[in-house]
Image (cartoon, rainbow, N blue to C red; front, side, top):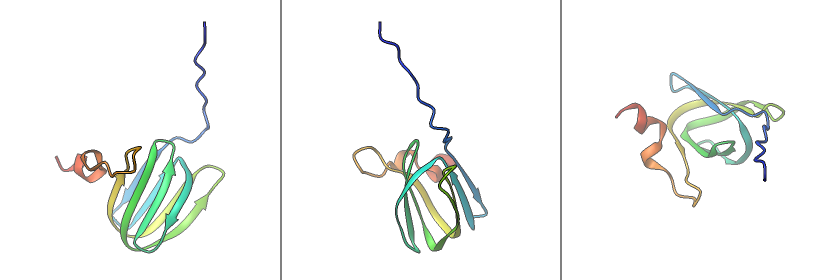
Length: 97
């Protein structure tokens, strides 16, 4: 019989949003692209998009997979595997249902 082996890469994914002014994301594998209005990150649980105004990286820890961003946060959402935004499961959609 084949055994299923779970690989633990040590990156637990989490998002901490503080007063829409800063966000800390853990479990980031790679930052695909970023500018002052949008960040696209590959996390352990899928692609994450953060949109806002005057966004900038405060801290980047590639060893532990943590990213700190400051600015005005307008949107936090995940993308499906086919590259489309998953509007039904976005953080703000789930919070305000």
